[in-house]
Image 1 (cartoon, rainbow, N blue to C red):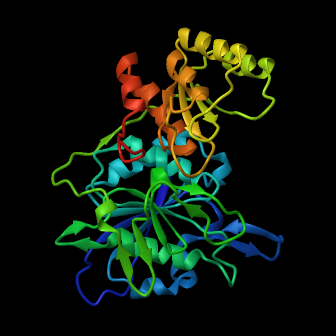
Image 2 (cartoon, one colour):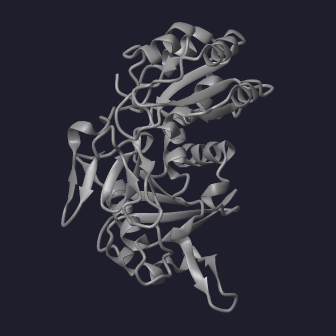
Length: 355
């Protein structure tokens, strides 16, 4: 499943902490192969050559490299479960975890892990890069080093950030509140509906009131099921009955994230509402989130969303699409009671939405 590589910074005394780095793939760990004119994964046994700053850290680092290195476009729920198991199996042995991941689906993975790792009481920091570590102007080194420092940071013997986060370009964000917004600039991620948890400048400044509290003796419960019979349906002007009926009629479909307009608005045409109501009557769970990065769904505020409320569409409040789809996957797999499932979808589980 993975191989481990111990990395030993020069420690003048006892290590103050231990971090397990899990390398899944992605741009950060790539170098240029001149012979074949392509980017290839670099050997993490040589990480001290690529990132000599590690020599100056005062905590132990071990790297776990997945046997199958993935471009993040190939990330699947099965990989999320695999990552959760790796963290479970090593939970007692390490103080914190850093996951090196491609940027394209990093927000999905961070959101999924926040649900799968119930009772998490240690840092799990995802990071990556826009440019490979083998490129002169790469952002990989700063992202990697600072993610390690945040993961290892403690106060009075407790971790400062005991939750799943994304660190990128000086900002630490709650993982299930983050979205990728840039493909060409270094500030790849943002969190419109929740404040950043830390900002790294000359010092790392923690936004303590917004960080999940450390809970002494909190037991880790790792869930190992995600339902994949889900889909996202974004609305657009001109969406037609055949398209909607084809999506809602997918055999075995159990959940749908409806990307609506603005504050949760949707067409009021009879055919559209009837199609949704019929699907809900057959047991389909429909969760309404906004296409806007900022703001929230306030179902019933406008006439165009009141009817969604009436037919049983659930409000996703200010969740990101990434959090909504992974939460739907998680609850469909782990909640057998339909009413409890609906209740938990519309309430925060691990900080993914406002109460």
